[in-house]
Length: 306
Image (cartoon, rainbow, N blue to C red):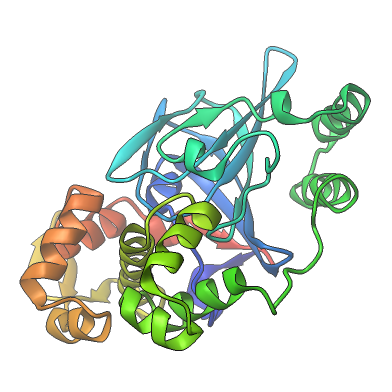
């Protein structure tokens, strides 16, 4: 197990839910970034609810309680929200890349937006469901759970690498490459399709309109950029950060993060636009959000498994 401060780099946008980490005592994460999957994660809940921010993704979670394996599938929120958690229960989660629907054919992606369902009820075959749930129940380690899920995912769903010749792949790749700093007109120019057609296609493939999808990707990129200031901080008693604020325990947050540059790089009109949208999606300003992560030992709780 490796702590995030060792400097691991993920070049492609990796959707984050930082407040999941804050609601735990130890949060493990393993990147995959293929087969339409972003990463796996595991944690023991230390709170009965966790903060959720928009990420344009679908998650599947598993946990044991009272001798039974429970499951849920959750789509992206549209604004800052919360999700319930069972105290002291160990969770195993899978986060898919934007636009991926692991319950395709059972529920539309748009129906999962701002919504949660019981995942095992969406497995069509009773025999396959019982076998899968039993395997997941008896999987003890993080790696065992990953293997159990991937065995099921590979054999019983469309787990093949996404066809890179599809319009959906081209749209998602272009948005991710830009960090959300483009417009529908840019996608129209890039693909050769009309904005009207792309609007319809994106809603079908991603469960939301183009404007929302681009906003969420841009927002998630800003979260990643800000969190990188934590990961790259090389200190013991201090962390480089905007301002000069002294907290109890003599931990000094000093240094600089240029929010103007961050905003303009990500396609926001200006710093004010960036802060307003960030607050809408997190409930806090960027500065307060990072303060909250630091003060609640985000970088100490999060571990990346190699």
